[in-house]
Length: 639
Image (cartoon, rainbow, N blue to C red; front, side, top):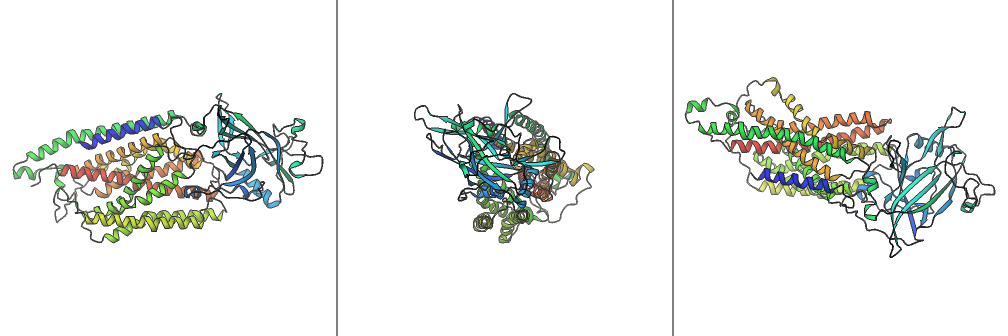
């Protein structure tokens, strides 16, 4: 009776978290606010160049942009490096609340190689990402259907177009940036905090009358002395080898009522919460349907079966028994490939623990977008620490199957899934290296990952296995016959392949709407922060996997088929197949990826994600079915 009560408490907690998560200022940004007096320098940093068409990031200075005297890399955490972030200083330096107009950054003459790279980046719609006081740069775009403004992360390197009267398509670079820095000023101290960082990019073919005199040159196309400012791109700067490009910028400061604690709302509230609620309602309907079936089985059919079996008194009546009690002597017989099952269950418990702990921290706000790379870093570290649970679970199950070589099962648990993941990751990383992308993980980071694996995760798996193997073996509630019982011919709808494929539909259906937002966040470079909704969907996924597996397991036992071990794992685990198929559908309908390497990267990473989802959902289903079978067979009298 304790399990349903705990489940209701968890659901209630999840609802409260879901309501609280979208609230403004709920998160803990992870950085202390910076106060600036008038005239204080503001350092603008540059980040990677990104494109949703290639998914291959590049460093800002891989293109012929203006460079500072010395390029300094910002310290990055493990998650930032794995995301491909490359944060460096820039030649753009502002003074707080001191506007600048038509400031010359530099003049560059591009050669054929640089012109080719610029054209390729413009063709692939690459965007330039910048950071000011930990806020990413955005481009405000007016919506046509609504009287509101949407925000695009970063500005495009350039654009394609045609001159009037010409059919030839040309490439133009955005060489003039009109920045807007929004600040919130304290009326008492007169100190200000930055709450917004926007830009309007323009392509302008700058002209100057006198000789070139560096930053002091007076431009005829942009001159604050003559009140001539850049407001359009009517005379754009073409990208051609041998041509000179003058890079300029404006910066103006705008007082804002937005407080520092709410400055991320612009980035986080870009999606419609109603769609998330629709996702939750859709998932809850599935759960209610399954809960009704489980209640019917547990409270009516199963209760009636147990009462009837316990009332059988004569030997003749016992010989006529049918249904799930008939296979009591074989239901706990160790399955084929029991070692592999132990490994997968242990790995699934490791995944479950990682997701649960990470999601709790995310809901509490410790992993907000302002803490770049924090989410990925936390997931890696928690995964490593959860190796203790993986080893403990696999060894406990292995000992129940009368296994004796606990070191063997420990090594398999420590190396099977991480090994497969590392091989896929290494191959994909090699492809990224071949494209000379900044998204390639450096050797030092790769070494750090291997060190986490071998130095922390593997020892913890061994410690967990040792502790688990020392405990007494779990005893089944009924004895197992020496000779296995023959399984009768099954109806077509109880075919293992059919039931496994059917079983995966409902868990996938419970999460597929939220899955759309997750894929959009990853592959379209948008922020995802509705962790309250995600946590609630995660709880619903657990309930759905458990209930559908219990229902199908009960039908299987009633058909006198006692080989439930692997089928219970595969029933809910098959939802990973639908996840991968949905990822393929998303690729062809939502993404604009054209390069072969980018397509390989997408399907490689989604294959890895689907594999992880299979391990997670399969373990949830197996544990639920394991608990269910022990419960029902311990409730009947076995002669």
